[in-house]
Amino acid sequence: MGSCGRWDATPPATEVEIVTSKVIFLFGVTGSGKTSRALGYAREQAALGVRVEIVNADSRQIYKGLPVLSACPTAAEYAEFPHHLFEFLALDEPYSAGRYGREARAVVDDIVARGAVPLVVGGTGFYFTALEGLPEVPAVPVAELKARYGHMSVDALAARVREVDPDWWTAANDSERRNPQRMMRVLGVAEVTGTLMSGYGATRGDFREVYEVEQWVMMREREELKARLRERVDAGFEAMKAEVAAVMARGLTDDAPGLQTLGFADLAACVRGEITDEDAKALLLKGHVGYAKRQETWGRKL
Image 1: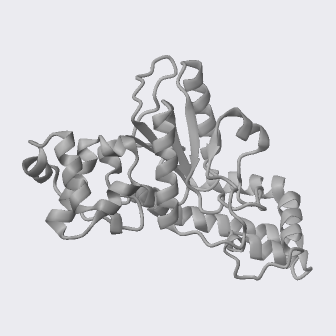
Image 2: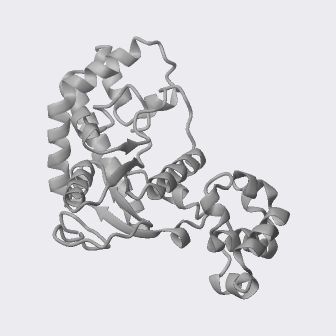
Image 3: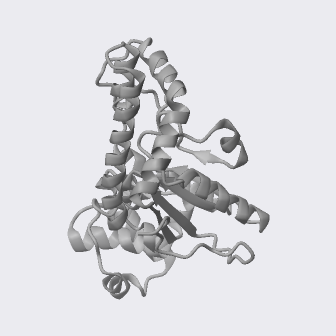
């Protein structure tokens, strides 16, 4: 694969079609340059009068306290454009894909409602899947939905939804309550499969019915990626080591979810004097290269 594999061509900087319901998914392996690409695209669109807001889809960048190790955006990068779901969670707080799906969907809905374009960026494949809600909600053919409910008015659909799945109706916002496709899907899931949409823990599974998704995947040639990761480790090692030492001083237990971040255990061993700096660097590089290989598998499935 080339230096940057993508399923959709990059929109030209000189021309843009403003689609308020567009959502961009940018999945990339660690070290591929996701943050730089996301910011570059946001700058291109800003020059054309299109507002872009960046939504995190990385399971390590949700945690506070390890910004260098988890390769979070810098303060200057945060300041350029609105960023969501970055560094908001305590290191000892668990976080599920289902919770991410609900919270990221709420963020995306809000961004679109304000007329901006959400750019969902990260390397955690199952976060993208959770945002769409695909594994949890049974599929109902669109043709069947139209055949059953296509003749109904918005008011009639709303009345039926209130009767069939009142919990969904209570949780829905005004936009959802006036969206015939959304309400037809709620009815279809309930009446065709015998289960309620409100009973699913993640998002409602209708993401691609509601939004136009433009999907990009970033990868690198193996040797190029390894060189980039080595440069990241060398350049950030002292800062990584310092932030790990600061976290260790807080006395968190080893099983704290945020401490499962790739490389934390190796750096902790270095801080304790159990391995040398060079050994720690080698382990960090090996771990990140291995993780990138696993991410490539996700990237091909998205």
